[in-house]
Amino acid sequence: MLGDMKPFRLAGNIYFVGTYKASSHLIDTGDGLILIDTGYEETADVVIESVTELGFDIRDVKYILHSHGHGDHSDGTPKILSLAEAETFLGAGDEKYIKGWTPDHLYEDGQVISLGNTHILCLATPGHTEGTYSFFFDVEVDGKVYRAGMFGGAGTNQLKRPYLNRRKCSWLNRGLYFKSVERLKKEHVDIFLGNHTWNNGTKENYEKMLTSDVNPFIDDTKWVPFLNSCETLAETVIRNESRDLFVNYAHRGASTYTPENTFLAFYTGMYMGANGIETDVQMTKDGVLVLFHDDTIMRLTGAEGSVCDYTLEELRQFTFEKEGQIDKIVVFEDFLKQFGWRDITFAIEIKQAGIEPQIADMMRKYGVEGKSVVTSFKFDCIRKIKEYAPELHIGWLKRNVTDEDIEKLRAIGGEEICPEAQEITPEKVEKWHREGFNVRAWGVYDEELMRHAYDCMTDGMTVNFPDKLTEYRKDN
Image (tube, rainbow, N blue to C red):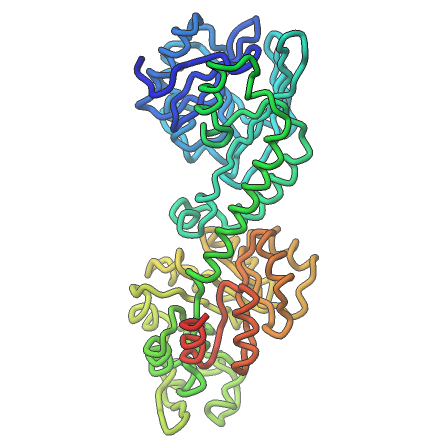
C-alpha cells in the first residue's frame, strides 16, 4: 500500500480512499462511482490503488467533485482523468488554483448532482476559497437513512491577510467564511465527512471501528460543534492580526511635530515607530501628482486658490513651517521612490476626483499595490479606482457608518471601512470584522481617543503623534 492510511468503508456506500493529509472519498452509486477530491499530484496513485484495493475499478468513476481548487484537493485530477473518462466539477472562481485540467462543469448553488442511488446537494460556502462548495447526501446503513455532510473548506489559516495578499484574494473572504459557517449550521448531518482527516477524526474513528460494533462516524452531535470551532478559529485569526499586524499610520507624517505631508514629517513618523504612512494626493495645474490635504492652500501657505490652480514649480516656491521646521511640497512619485521599497504600509487618500487612473498607474509603477489601501471620503473616487485597478485594496473614510454603507462598499469590492474614532465601539468593530472588513480609525485627535480606538481591536489608525501610539502598544 502506497498511502499512510488504509482505504476502508466509512458508512453505507461511502469509502475513504485518501491519505492523512488529503482526504478523498469514493461513493458507489450502483450506477458508477463518484470521487470527491483527488488529493495531491504525488498521491494520485494512492487514490487509484485504494480504489482498486476496495474492489472497484477507477475507470468506473463517472463524476469527480472538487470541494475547492487548492492543490491538496485537485492536483491529482489529471492522473485520474488519464484513466477514467469522468466529468469534473469545480466552483466558479477557483479555476485560478487548478493545474493540468479544465472543469467540465461549474457548480450552481443548490445544484443536485445525481448518479444511480445518490443525489448530492452542492452548496456554495466560499471563504476558504472563492469557489468552495460543501456537499450533502443521504446514505443508507442497515436499513436506516442518514444524512452525510462535508464542509468543503474549513481551514482558517487561509483567512490570514498575508496569505490572502499572496494569493491575490479579497479580504472579504473572511466575511464569506462566517456566512458560510452560519449557513452550514442549518444543515443536519449524521455522518460528518472530513475535508481533511483531522476535521472529523477520520484516522481515530477508523481505529475505533476495528474494535467496535458501533460505527463512530454515525454521530449527529459532531457537526455543529465542529462548525462552532471553525468560527472561533476564524475569530482568533482576526483578533490576533488586529494586534500583530496593527498599522500605526503617521497621519500626513508625524504632523503634530513637523510640517504635514513632507519628507520631514514622513521620516519623523518612521523614527517614532510608525509602520505605516497616510498621505493625500492631488494634481497640479500641469498634471503632476503631489501630496497635499486641504481643498485650498491658504492654511499652509497664506495664498489663495487650490493645488490645481498652480503648476508644480509655482507650488515649490512655497514653504511649509511648523515648530520652526521648514519643508516643501512633495511629488507623489518622489514619495514612492523614497518609501515605496520600505517595509511599511501606505494609506493613500484621493482628495481630488478624476485623478484615479494616474494614482493607480503610479502605484503600479513602484509596486506598492499589495501593501497599500487607497481611500477617500468621496465614494465615486474609490469606486472608479477599483474599476480601473481591481487589484488595489480600497477603503471608505466615513462618518456615521450604516449597514447600507457596508453593503455599498462590499458591492464594489471595498475591503476596509474607516470610521471616525469617536464612533467606534468594540461591538461595531467585531461586527465589521465578521463582515470581512479591515477597520481603520481616523480623527484620532488626543491620546484618550487613541487608546479607545486601539482597545476596540481596530486593525490600524491614522494618528498625528505616532510616538504616543508606539508607546501605548508596547504596554498593551
